[in-house]
Image 1 (spheres, protein in one colour):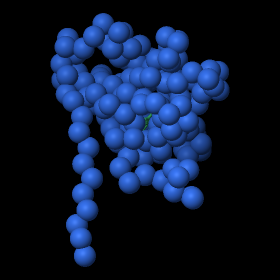
Image 2 (cartoon, helix red, strand yellow):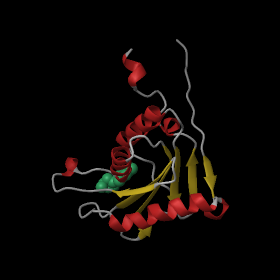
Image 3 (cartoon, helix red, strand yellow):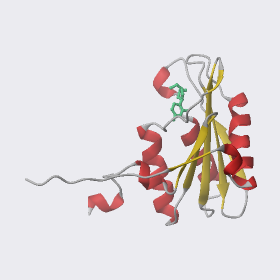
Image 4 (cartoon, protein in one colour):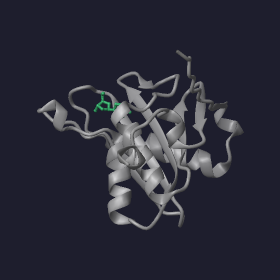
Amino acid sequence: MRDLNLHISFKLYAYDELSEADRWLLDAACEATGRSYAPYSHFSVGAAARLADGTIVTGTNQENAAYPSGLCAERTTLFYANSQYPDQPVTTLAIAARNEEGFLDDPIPPCGACRQVMLETEKRFQQPMRLLLYGKKGVYEIERASDLLPLSFDAASMK
Ligand code: THU
């Protein structure tokens, strides 16, 4: 028997330490939360994707009375971006969330299903997709989506 370890590393930034472009993208994700449809959870999530050509696409969580039919902000955004701009890699995806009291102090970690979709987006364009996760107390930067899903299942797993 052997112990195997995978570890992830990510950075914590103060908002003011980020570049103007990153702050702009995070602001777009925060603003997008205002367009969330979350009548059940009252938890509004917004995402903003920057594409390689500079296009910005935003999206939000979309809930449904049949709960599992709803979709997270990350997947709404990536599916829209990939549908509208299938040849444009997503270079950075910013995510923000707020509950009824306001934006959260700490970033929310994306759910497992969204991580799987992020991984696919990264693989299909064969280039890293950076993640910026907004929190009032600080912003996490994850260099590539695959960092959030160690030991992942992808196309190569089927060969
Ligand atoms: N949600 C997201 O949009 N992204 C995440 O990463 C986690 C959860 C949404 C789904 C649902 O509409 C609400 O937040 C509560 O789970």
